[in-house]
Image (cartoon, rainbow, N blue to C red; front, top):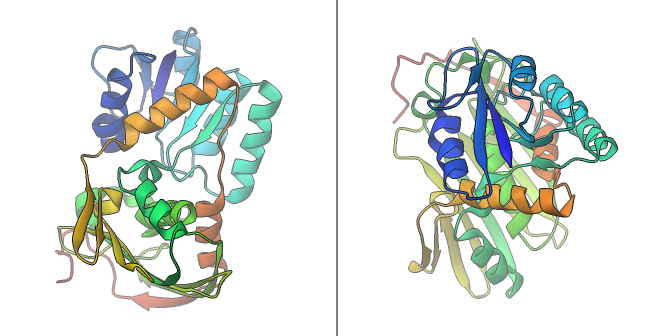
Length: 311
């Protein structure tokens, strides 16, 4: 299957291009970006030019920020191409519902990708939690925005998601691994005075069995990052660490494997296309929307990318 990749940033070059190259069922046939290029393939300034100049591509992978993604996805779907959406799948829940309907009408595949679900320890974590009583969950998803989004001012604009850009990865794991559905009970968002999006979020949830879930998302932690989900259970304390690469039970390692999230995602995409199916799970995005809708907003000091993260 010939793919066109749109939005050539750090994630596209570090994750998507190698994952496509490693999959024998895929060929990267074209790229589109206003600012960057991929070596060895035709490069175009935008999606429209790519669809015209590389008419044989069968699928489009969108790695652009969420704000401009909706019209691009509609353009690709209406042109009869399968579409792979980098996370988050859209700026709003309603947008993605429209894209789902567009894909169904066009008879093509739409994938709302959640790469963190494919981290090597996530499935074992989910299986272990289903087999015991869950008492509480604590989520710490902290990193330095200066390291992971250097110079990317769009992340602070309306629709940029702020700290929920990484935080939605935690939601994608939680909605897959926790045994019961959960809902928001409190949301405190901390927004720098010169930004429109939060740099930190303190969130409380409860699942349908009454289990409390506490989340802290922080964009101002010095490296190394903390991407942990800790579950207190009848069987002991499980800690899913490094975004899902490691799993511990009472401090003893159960899983520690190299990252293979994007190769697994692309295998899933190929399988969906072969089956004529789509995969559009909106729960992680819904939890982000709820966090904004029920938020208490707290203004904090202005963000300055040139000032190191708080210790």
